[in-house]
Length: 251
Ligand code: MN3
Image 1: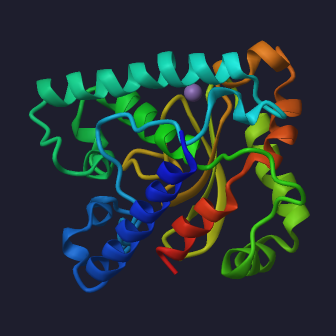
Image 2: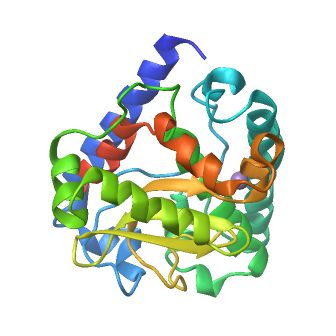
């Protein structure tokens, strides 16, 4: 994808967030998150549709930490499958696909297991691709996000250790998250399978700002059983601009 379309995408995200900010506060009754018991008055600033969006970089752009074949299979097979299946489930269960996916996630307990697995799978991957970018040296957040991370976790290094531990110790397939909880605090947690913190039945609830996929399909070709190595290398790929955008949308 060209720089132009990357920047268009950023503009789109930025505009979407401005729209979310403009509409979210004071109109929380229409926020999909209000039906999620643990999350109140958090506007959905970054909305996700049912279609798979283009990968914002080439398959080989992340090769310092994730090889091109893993990226290609992960995006064009696994994630494409979730996108296809969530639309099948939505058609079967009379879901209005012009509305954001977040509406479904907030009430996921009302839907089928197929919807839970694929709505989660689609949302999580759409977010995951955006959470990464080609390697950046001395990669770390700035601004209010860095202040909040330091305030909540003592230091950026200690935050990375705790988040990394959540990713490394998630048993079986799942995700680790940095999310904003109901008290508007940054929190680290993990979920099994394709669950996420937006789901009403999730053990952890809130608005996710950073996600790592720890299913074996995300790393096995390059790392085999060494998940910890994948997680440690992944930090150089984190797109802190995107994470900050998500964070600032609720600040
Ligand atoms: Mn995956």
